Length: 288
Ligand code: 2YH
Image 1: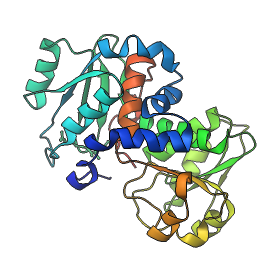
Image 2: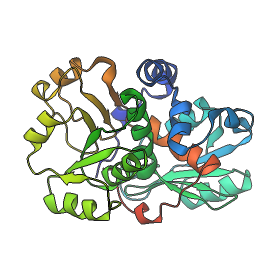
Image 3: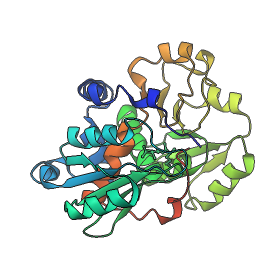
Image 4: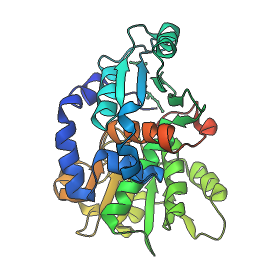
């Protein structure tokens, strides 16, 4: 399980304009555009109503407790993409109560295992792991110019990797799966739609040398080296920490998409407000 740290998030709120510029350069979309693409929502249809949707973010003290700045950062991301948003003054049950009393439309809250967005009007539930996967897959698709006849190597077959594999197949990609626990990759392969050529890779180095399109959904850092990267490599990294080492990263330029929180949060909220998926199967699993 990856628990975000204050260091992972403290600069996010003041870097959102910069993130939009980087995303535009990489994908031709802003953060809201990626969230809409991931959610199957026409961005133009959100612009008139998104500011009228209020999201409450509730700090949660359970388990390892509050991450300083986490709720305010989530709130800042939501404001940046156009929602009205606030962090509740109270934590936990008091915060949930406050969200209802202030007539919030969406409620977002995270403990150590589950980060969820709830639509209080229509009872839609969106899990961060699935939304994160969908956001990064949408971004990778844009960077790749579409997935037709392409195979994407999914590293890590936990909740994010599993949801990424499903989203990739829905968008027309073929999928190769790798997990350090081979049985996890094999189990996922059996759950994916039949008729799609899905392969399970057992040797990480060989797989990284073979495939040009990657989703790194692992909680491991710096295991992808420069020798694994070619000029054709295009990668998305929802995993924290980043799987590419500094040499590999320096060769990627605009062909690597990563953020620790922004894409997942934006996609959760757009799905909860305008799209909607039921994520009950993932509701108690961690991000990677
Ligand atoms: O970072 C995390 C978990 N890894 C989320 C797992 C989701 N799949 N949780 C954030 C905890 C936030 C804290 N409770 C707060 O500040 O409210």
